[in-house]
Length: 195
Image 1 (cartoon, helix red, strand yellow):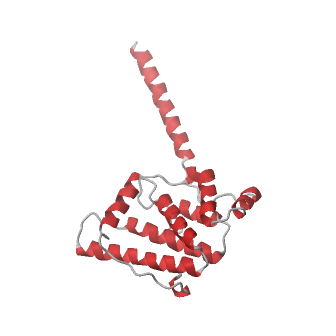
Image 2 (spheres, helix red, strand yellow; image 1 turned 45 degrees about the vertical axis):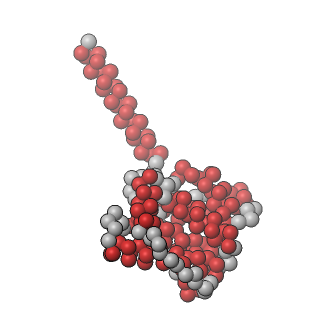
């Protein structure tokens, strides 16, 4: 009976090991979206960038990083999580628009690189510094010709993609609470605000 139980336990354990290995292989980070001619045409047929993001999310949502890491993978160290960068790279937009969207993604991600758990002057100053960069993002997006509704919708989409786990959302809320009562001033749509 002991041998049978031990054999069963070893088989069960090896089955778990195989399942875990398969699971790890399935979640290998994808950093590029294969742009087939059909996908390109479908994206071109959309009237807004926000609609393009919706198409990409519908088709490629499983590639989004949901690891325990707050910042997630960033192989080229440009401050943008690789999966979000893949979404932006897949869009059918001009290069200036793509750069403005990447600037938005980088600004949205930046607060995840800091520990804002303590409410002190240094953290409040850093949070305000990061938040002020969003005014530049808005000015740049408008400068490159993104329409107002799309400026708003693409920022909301980038936020949703960035804060896609509980720990990322909680980190964002902690950062955002430090901004309570702060005021921002709109910047003119000028090239100098584009990175």
